[in-house]
Length: 404
Image (cartoon, rainbow, N blue to C red; front, side, top):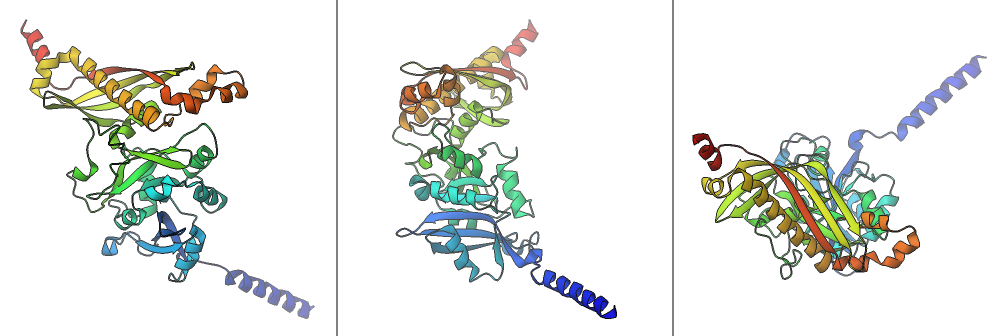
């Protein structure tokens, strides 16, 4: 009996010891929080991974906030990870990856093979953010999060919350379904480095559709910041291939028509003066599509407009009644210009009007025979913007009325 007890006791000890042998602590892993994919020579790519050092997070040593960037050149991402593991003492862990960036050169050639492989990797979450940059390595090297001790949370706050007005939500799972389908089109955030070429002029469609009068060049922004990595625009896709880049204001127009806009600043120029307002939606947009030889698309936007900067000259010229019409007409003009660029020049349905067009057809066969992708480039747009101006300060006509 005693022998049996001793054997059982020894067996339990052995089981406990063997169970601890494979156990790993949190700091035994190198957590990949972001990855960049740049085109290299031949069929190879330069892969850059941003590793979070859990022991250094919050200490801001060397201004890195616990982030270390390591690069390797390989044919695929997982081979690059094996190469990087030869220089890093910890095993790579992809379960906390929040951002995957593709260079513009890579994106122009198509990124479906990459996104499909990432979806198959169970450790990479479907909610991982996908973006584009001229140079992914430069963006990650210039990334230095401020006011945030956790770099993983920084990406969540920048790309997933209401903290920035210039970011479209672009998740890996959404891009996977869009690139493998026939109807839905994606736009991704375009990331850049302050003071460098964040967006190539050719991507912005300089010849066909230059920067609007309300747009600004990201390289001329008077910003001084420790973190030089920023959102600089949007990237337009057709299927899995990037076809062009867009400015920050084009991003706003896209968000307005896709029911994703938040309160954002908007500047309107008149007679050399600047009228600054804050726009926000008080009702969701109304969109109607009629499918004839040329699709006719009606768009009604409903916006609240807070006047935050109103020069006397503009106030005297427009008065309280003229402000609403002036802002409305300016938005209509710029929205039509934006839609002309995406439909006629880029030939891509960035607003996914196809989901409204499908309602005109009873069967999938009838919809397929209509040929939306070909018809959309000749679409006609009727844009209406209802603007309710909340008037701040004293307007010229208010003063005149009070004297009567």
